[in-house]
Length: 209
Image (cartoon, rainbow, N blue to C red; front, side, top):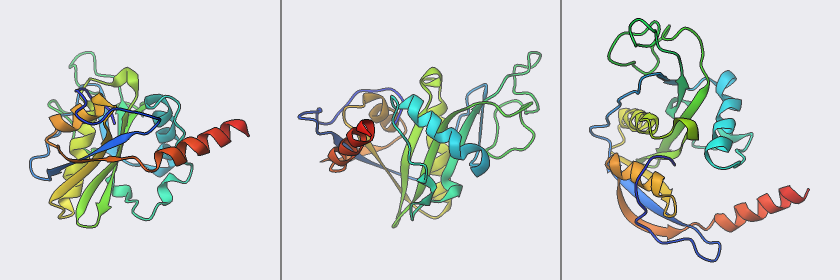
């Protein structure tokens, strides 16, 4: 969810959405971290509430379940967060960081905690690595953050010994489809989003309550 590109799937019709199932190998996952951003592992005490706020901003007010960490396949090691931090005016690099980028989890990089501007959730699904959600706040999109988060998640899942990665992207979201295509994913099939009507009904009920 996020990025740039063009849709290659079926259009939205009669309120039904379609998904592209996309796959790639775990080999060669590239992570180029943009200037002004730190990628780090998930911190429950800080990110449990920050992540729903990013979802609402990135997906037009979509509400993220409060118990989102409780699904059976949840792996906290597969959640990575992007923070915006200020660069050192003299060097142009992040304060406290070496030139040329930042390794995920580096400590002491950046003068203070910055706002959470994006995140990715990945976990094992059978013998596949699955990227469940990738979101970047609109004001920070198209700057490479989505690509960096995606590459980080793919790299982590590959480190678990998973050779194939999988993601689902709505066909009417060309930005998402384009992001994954650019990252080496290929569309293997297109299918109807059976959960869509259920989600819509829930939202309607909640709005009337």
